[in-house]
Image (tube, rainbow, N blue to C red; front, side, top):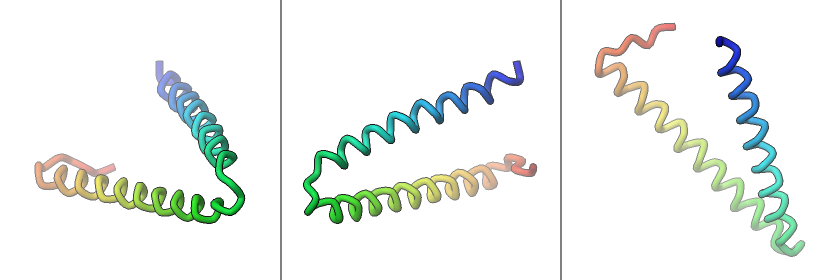
Length: 74
């Protein structure tokens, strides 16, 4: 039973990664050549905002866990 989470996470990452690749490729192919630079810039901004939001949620979760006295030691 210890192998199930490993196999499930690998499958999930592969399935979602494949889906995201084809979704991004389809949207990228829909844009004219003139607009590709602006699309890439907008995509980069959105990706950066997502990474910052993810980092913020992680920090807030860590601080709240520490304040509530949860043991966060590895």
